[in-house]
Image (cartoon, rainbow, N blue to C red):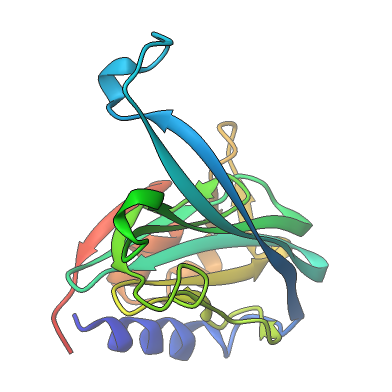
Length: 207
């Protein structure tokens, strides 16, 4: 399935049955430099070589008048990766990051995002205009039952879907699922996203 078709299917299927609650997203960018290991094999050793990186982080909060169950949707050119946040609350922490090596002119960077404990992959992006300018944040209001863009780059996009707490069940392992009386009317693909595993990946067709 083409990625925009999947997002439209989510909106078309859920908007008639999900109460609409406004969601706001507020936060700000900051940058910091740090030194880290050149290779994962060095972790914990205290030995070099080291490399210098610069991090641009957007830290904010997703807020609503009701507790939210959130599905993070991370789209690359070939796949949709999805993961559910286990925390259900009316205010959830959000982080978007773009990281680049300082000795590579910052043209090659890594983009990632998270809502609460739902974390996306880190994917390589091009940041010729600067690491903050390479990533656009959607700072307008969203609504429960509709997919919304959290952050976008030329190479990947991060969307999210928020549902009111009243429409989901939570198991012992903090994994939420859409209530059966709502899920049974959805297409099988959406049931996979909203009633089963905590995370997964779907292959998508190019636009």
